[in-house]
Length: 143
Image (tube, rainbow, N blue to C red; front, side, top):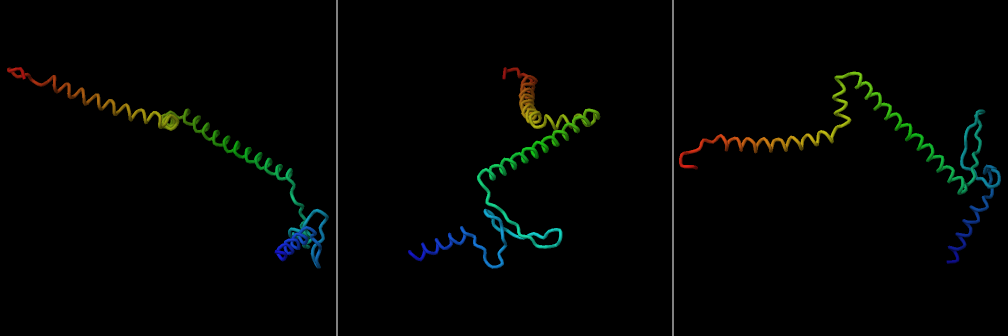
């Protein structure tokens, strides 16, 4: 158990002090070396980053939410514009108007039409049966 405690304390000490080893880049206090980048003079420079605070993380999430909202509004506006252009072009061309109305009104009307057609077929069958009964010649014995 002492060995485990000692090793955890040693690891904690190493990472908390961030002592510079031989050849390790020198970064300002509170930052750590995260990588390298080649500058305009084709020299490799060290990239030093600081740990993000809670407020920094909140700002990043707010900025991301803001950008996402603008993108969604832009997509919605583009789709609305496409729909408007389609409506105007359909209204200008009477041959397309019927197809556009079918698209806009769509399923509600077609579903109701199917239901009404079924009801109409049932009524027509009943009327045909009634007509057959009325057209049937009566026999002399009353049957």
